[in-house]
Structure formats: C-alpha cells, structure tokens
Image (tube, rainbow, N blue to C red; front, side, top):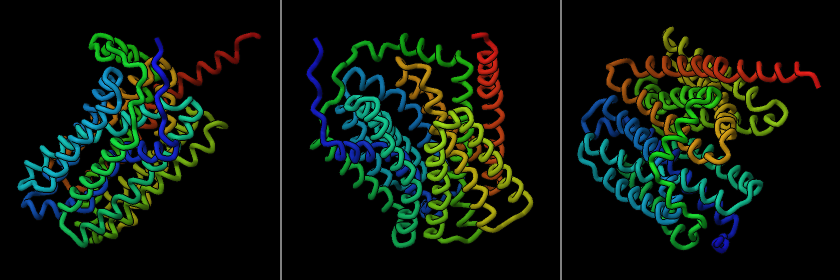
Length: 411
C-alpha cells in the first residue's frame, strides 16, 4: 500500500532549510581559512600541520557521504539529518576547545562526519518533496547559496581573524548548526515515504558502483571532476599562507580576495546555465576545462618565474574558477543522467572521489617541506591541464565519434 503523501513545508521555508544544510560543506571549509596562520602561531605548529586540519576534513567528508544516502533510504531523512547535525555541533565545540594541533585534526575529522549529512540529505529531501521540474527550480536556489558561501564565508572569517581569536570561528559554526537543528526539529517532517529495507545491502551497492565504473564516459566525467577539485583544494590549502604570510595581505583583505576568486566560480555557473541548452553539456565542459587549464598554467608560470604580487595569484585563479564554474554543474549532470535508477549512487560516488582524491592530494603534499606558493601553483597548473586532457580523451572524442556515426547512418 502506498504511504500517504508527506506534508510539505512552505516552499520558501523548505528552500531555506535545505540551503542551510547544503551550506555546511563550503562554510565549514571557508570560514576558518583566514585564521590558518593564526592557528599555527597559537598552537605552536607549522603550516603543514595546520593544512592537515583541512585535508582530514575533506577525506572524512568524502567517505561519510556515501553512508548517509543508503541509511536515509532505509531509516528516513529526518533522523539521519538530526544525528549528523548533532555530531557536527559536538565536534565544533571540541574544535573550539582544542588544546593542540593533534586534537584539532581529530575533531575536524569528526566535524566532517557530521557536515556531510547536509548536502546528501538536503538534495534527497528536495527529490522527495518536489516533482522533477519543481526540484530543478529549488535546487537552482540551493546551488546559488553554495556559490555564495565561498564568497561570504572567508570575508566573515577575515573579520573574525582580525577582531577575535581563531576559536571564535568554531563557536560561530556551532551556532549555525544549532539554528539548522532547530529549523529541522520545528519545520521539517519525514520526507521519505518509501523506506527501502534493502537500501544498505552491501552486495547491491558494490554491484551498482562497479557498473558505473565500467562506463568509460562516466569515468571521464568523474576524473575531470577530480582534477578540477584537486586544483580548488590546493588553493584552499595554500592560498592563505601565500597571500597572508608571503605577500603581506591582512586576514580581512585575504577574505575579500578569496571572495573575488569565488565570484569567478559564480559567473562561470551563470554562464553555464545560460548556454548549456544551446551548446550542450560536452561543449560546456571542454570550454570550462580549457579556461581552468589556462588559469592553472598561468599561475604556475608566474609564481615559478618569481612573481610575488597578489595579482599574480588572483587573476589566474579567477580564470581557473570561472572555468570550474562552467564545468562542474555540467559534469554532475552528465555523469548522473545515464543512471536514472541509481542517480543517488552515481552522485554519491562522484562526491566520494571528488573529496577523497582532493583531500588525499592535499594530505600527501602537506608532508613535503616545500614552498607553499610553488606547491599551490604546481597543483593548479597540473590539475587544469589534466582536466582538459582527461575530458578530451575519455568523453569528448568518444561522444563526437558517436555523433558522427549517427549522422552517417541512412534515414
């Protein structure tokens, strides 16, 4: 017997709540970036150790994503969302009270386990409540919030780093999570009307993932996505040390500079939204990857040649993020669309590789006693070039061949 329809909250209210849950990811990463040098000084450690608080967060965020989806399919969205936010609140308080860099690294990992509930379950709630067309409209607002998060959070973080202690960042995150939990308790009911007792069956999950990874086009989208985010996370890991420590920016000015780079991503996403119907996903992806390759190669050449001004970092970074803004939304649509019955699994796998690979790269590189500026520039350059090469070989050429073959068939 089909369960009765779930009572849907007001559409605007629901959009706000989902946007807040999805924002856990960018806000938790970006808010404390201007305070990284301050953390190193206060906890008597070096840049490499502080950077590990970011890389372990990304690794934890990646691997826990793949857990929340199947669990919520079986037990419901609301209890998993409340549990995840509860873990996040406890971990944020522990981060604020950390007395050593080792403690902060562990608590950031726990914070990631809680934060990853937001994007996974937020998107699932939208799918539960809305039709396909309505869901697309709601998610467009949610994605806008995600794009604005990297713009506003570092600016706010810069203010905190200028006027307060780095621990205040984590108290702000605790307050934000408490507001989200209250909103879920008061206004969000259970949206999953079709709980599946087999959703967590390990054999079925492995079979679905194996099928996806056997598809060349899906792998091409996945690897391109990984390359794009590797460049992004190298920027997240190194930019504050480069612009503040090496080039003399204040934390407040760094927050403004970070916001400027993020505007590049927002403009790229808006460009993609306007042109994708006319040009198609593959053309948008290869154009965006080309922009990222140009931006990454430019910052690599400039910093390795000795440029030591913020413009040498910021201008190529804006070009890189503009290309990323064009590419990433189209990658996600192109990767998931061939699997309508396993769209959630396809999306989870994409997110797993996205954060695990990028987090792993930054974690490994943080162990090398290397100039942060040259390290960041090298990663962004290699990531941008690898993105366009992988997409061309694995997606663009095969799809163009298929298109030519179809056109050559007689009517």
